[in-house]
Amino acid sequence: MSTLTTPATSGSGDPTGTGAPAAADVLADETVPAPEERLRYRLLTGPDDRAFCERVSAALADGYRLHGNPTVTFNGVRVIAAQAVVLDSSPESTVPSWSAVTEAQS
Image: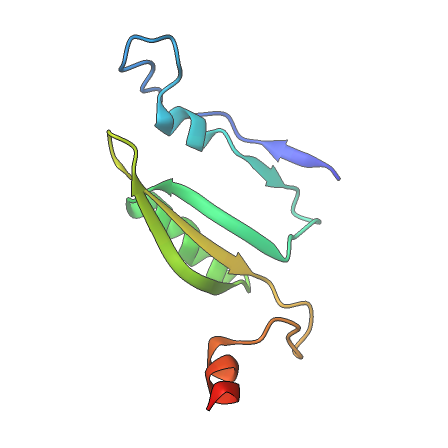
């Protein structure tokens, strides 16, 4: 599998003085699949800001759909969000939609 690596761009450095990279720098240094290798499942993470929302919106525009609820946590500096997205392999989804699950339980 070939991958593209995107470098950290936040440049926030070491706010704690411990020599460790800032959380935003670690989150921004992600391995992204090459365009020809679209993953069926992705977990998008990052600071809860406009850029994160734009990444989720871009995934939805690219054919992915939301999978489960978003999750947030606080790392002592900022709120970090996560959202899973899935790409259906065919029109006949192998992953049931939430409405199909709730209908089956009725």
